[in-house]
Image (cartoon, rainbow, N blue to C red; front, side):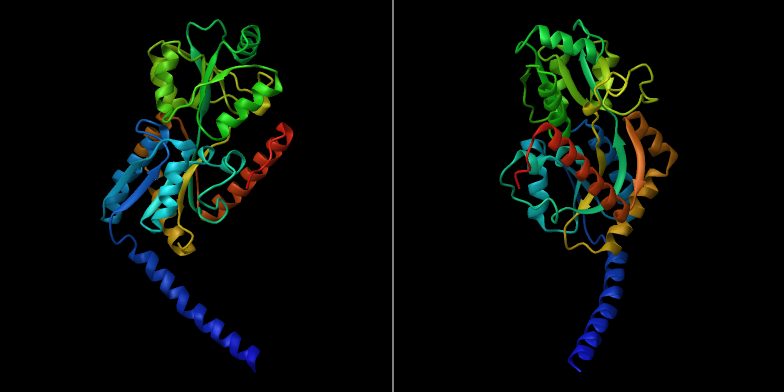
Length: 323
């Protein structure tokens, strides 16, 4: 009798919850929506967020505000999102900025497994390794030999997170010694590169592009498995024999743990609908986005696969998870 009663109560709860979640999804948003980013203005993620925001506020009937919170290895933005506990505040970021936190920080103010609820995957960022035009190296093979000949004399600036992690692994793997220049906002690094204050950067193609177009920086490699049609003359790190330098960065949005699946699906469909506009797609491609839209369930699967890849790389490099 108790079992039967429990089953009836559970069924009743589900019957009430499903219509409630559906109604919640249909009525959202009820006020302004905030997108929290771990980068400053001008990054490829910022460009995407602002393009989406312009169209979404028409679709949603409420303003969409992009808030840039650079610094702290992405922790400032993540912590602000988690502390908000608000389904009208979304975390909008590339996975590369925070996926390494469990390996970098012994104490985190958030739970990576439970506090970030996947909503939508939008794109992959094209990540590149660039150097000043004055540097006597034209690809990563030549660059490695140059660093070897000048131990401790050359500087690097990398996007915090996975990109920085794999570059430091590359240095250890090949016995190379360089000086890290930390950036609160990595979009400032190309300017220092152009002025020969640092000798290599690892950033999205969109961030490096202005200095490349100005003739003050050059590409050494794309941090990918193969060449990109956006930079067809630039070899990939795999092609050059440095497969561990491949950086994977999925750009998307996350909601709070309490956000139900129905609502996440609704937001995902709305964002993907904007991406399907040919004008928006063209502008995002110009900002070095490789569009790969997917809903919350597929995004969650992709994130688990990425976590597995990172754990495998960390094991090879002898890096332990700290929490």
